[in-house]
Length: 312
Image 1 (cartoon, rainbow, N blue to C red):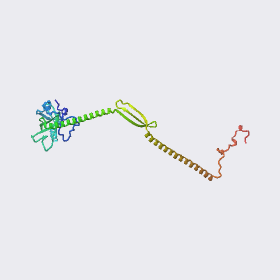
Image 2 (tube, rainbow, N blue to C red):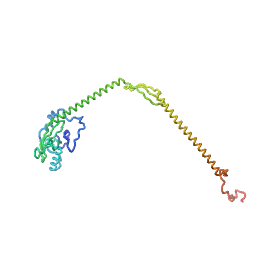
Image 3 (cartoon, rainbow, N blue to C red):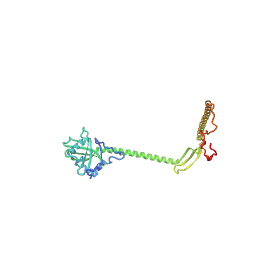
């Protein structure tokens, strides 16, 4: 038995119609988890839960139970006009969240005019893999009424067709997978028949262009091979080397020419500076010694008596 406040009892419900203000999340695994069981009628007639709920019994509105009666009545009426409401079977405590067509142009989901003071509701959904239909009424003042579950044979036929189509797609994908596996095995056998991988790799080793040529067994992962001189690549690299050396020599010659021109220009500048100095100072002779004479000669009175014989 499910408690009236237990939300786990709603886990097996899949509504057909969505609430106007809140869009029901679509099942993410719709192609992985079937919505219905293969034999819905047999399950509806044999399962104990459906046996109890298929008998008409008392139901109550369970929304906003902590609010005043007047507010609950208003909430129930507005919820019915929006296309959703929450009820519970009093005898079993099973909670149901009903979602139905709330179009004002028809009374198929909720009918306020069928009986004065009552709301007659019809809600279709999937419960425990079976397409069912809740049919009943609720008093607008007392917020209680009566109702029962019925097998929705029309929706069950639609879901059965969708289930068969889904199973057919699964079988088709399974056949395609098996075909791919078979082709993969056949390709593997063909590869094992040609189990040697022949490899040619070109590279430069110790300044020499070489080529490794050999084979490796794909199962044992061993084989044989040797190095060969790659004459084609060697000719290309030799030409590139000669071109590089020629560019280096050209740059070296240009550098030496610039150095020679710089030295010649320096010597020419020094010669011009000497000629200019001679023209500007013709009688001036360079000093004979590198150390000039002291401007103040020593005074005779500075000589001590004991170091000289006479004092002048």
